[in-house]
Image (tube, rainbow, N blue to C red; front, top):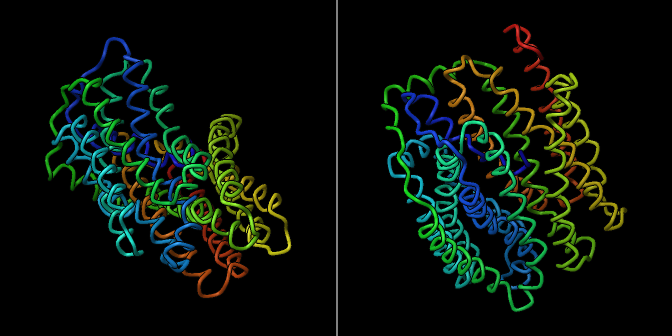
Length: 420
């Protein structure tokens, strides 16, 4: 699961786990449909990479503050942060295919309107429209993947789904500077056209499939209550929120830091941003190996946060050159990338019971989106108020909390008799 695969199939599982066991099962996997659906996620992720690379241009052309620029970045997570868990049930009732198509159309609408924006508030409002569409895509795709894949292929399909966000972000970070040569609005217009065209492709290529009935409200409420009253899922969710906070604050505002503070070009900043995303994805892929060879979950989390605290002094240093800052940021997000995949892999141990695994994963996803929403905003406000040089204080505090939570998780898992 790549860094930004925070959204993976969690909500789909949250719905499926507490429904009757009548989920349709495909006898063979339609791989061409799997690819088509993953590409829908890639299209949905384009606005994340696009906005990160456009922030320096927005600062120059619209004269917005660092805090406002951070709000533009984080607004893409606002709907998911507030409504991710209940939205899973709503999409099941509404139909995942329809949710994906409408979601892509909303991304197209928001992007088209964003190209017309002339102020930060207007741009933020269009980002919320895009966020609504993104939520439909990231919930709808995993639901369809469950039903279009054979049981033996499902884990592979969902693992491949985890590449959608780093892929979409990296594509736009690498290609964005060349598109932006025609103005930042062109970035928004290109995203709008691609999203609308891909909505048509999904409508033509992806069939409607039968879905199980959505869970009763009382059943869902009781399941959520049980998970929220258990310490391990809450600790795991807090760890994931901190991880998302640092990931999206650094990846989202790194191009701005490189351009404004170190004098990098937009193209150089885009390349560095893409490298950071790819490094994070690589880090995710090693999490399974670390757990398999016996590295305790708590130790992975504690080590990753400790490195974050130390690396922040270099990432926000005025003395280091562009290449060193980019390398440190990549190393930091590669190592912290061990956290999300480890948490997901260990989620059966965090859940109070097997039947509550889906809701536990839903809680983790909700927390991760809150971290994604707050990370860029808090860092932007911090840099605006105290300067980029003061940023290490924020990340050292974040690291200390992360290490504390890792030790708490160790105690909670050992108390339950689970491996730590």
